[in-house]
Image (cartoon, rainbow, N blue to C red; front, side):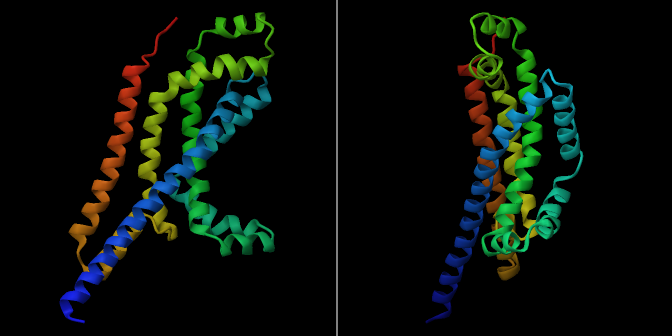
Length: 231
């Protein structure tokens, strides 16, 4: 094999590293979003509940998570949390993909509490008469929340939720500190192996920019297609 052929094989390998990093970053985004959104809904309902205990618990969750840096969350879930688990569970975690799992937990919680505040704002923006009308039609509180209040609140909250999704996408880069082989990790790996920092980090920068712009465009299209109308 000639030196030129070897260089081509190595270039292809480095390209594969970057693509693998991009795929893992997208998987982190998808997994975290799927967990964060229903978590945000649950916390928002707690914060708007008629129960003082639930409101206090919801506020404690939000303040306790969002006032701690994401980096601290990642380090806690990766280094400290496994030590609190039973030995069999800890071994099962280490046998799977602990970097991905712990990063997903940290990102989901961090994004979830921020989404909760956006959804809570959406709930408060729905006129109280909507709930009163639903209850007058014979719907229970849970049914009224599920069928009347939440659909309207989430529709109002979609633009800020998409903005939080952009933040979540960018926050996936922090997972590199615990060794998750996402895009920044792979870009640094390519740079270390080849010293081609321009190509490696340009790829990562353009990938983050492209996905962020795609999400922002979705937010703009949604706002035009479904403008929020106040009653």
